[in-house]
Length: 279
Image (cartoon, rainbow, N blue to C red; front, side, top):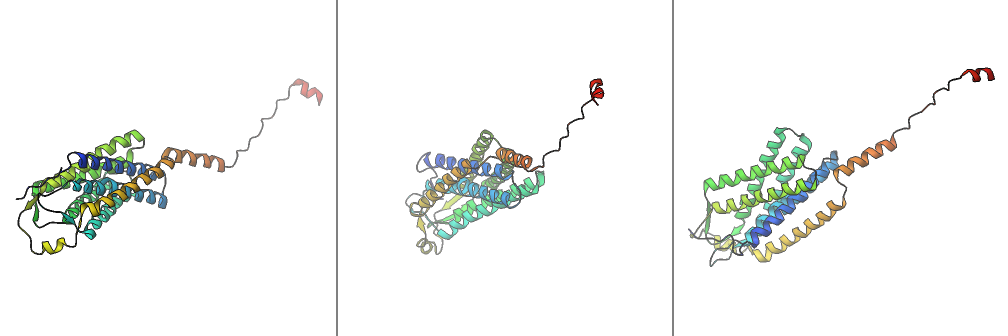
């Protein structure tokens, strides 16, 4: 079995990956707080925007930032571009489905567990499809117990994310939840990496397939930077948009303005003795 390194740049890649994961989860949870103030298509749009934040920045970017620190001695790891893009699309689709389930399915336990299961399995699929995008001369395998543990962590993280999306409204509670979710996403990633086994036996046709791949610096780094810029744009959009409380207050104010004024009738004046004498 070939030795691999997940921390070739020390703590730089795991720390940066954790920061980006927490940022993506924070943006996504803030979007869900806006979504709860609306209904119909507007709610769906906010939930899909949350899915973009959580899936791309919170999960996918974290994974491939961490993969920048993955090296195998005396080998060059390359990546298949279509498979790598597919892993990002899968993350977006499953997170979007989970958020739509809880966004329109109510606050019961059943939608929460179903959505969490879908997101967890989708996040695990994204991770292992991203791993399958790697091109190297050796063959890969996985330790079954650690593989199962990584999937369990992903399901728990997905369920916790949906629970937070349904209930948290304040900035500080959302920030705390996003920091915890960042730990869960990072934990799932490195558990999956610990499950990986690299064997020094060249698989048939692997050398030929490596010619179609690209290096991490040439492909992943520009893509990560682009998605990170998108995350900061989303930060500005969310910061400038009204909060859920402000949305409710505006709706209540408009309802009061639109309501017809109540007719008020002055009570009849009592006529005393002097009033009777004047008539």
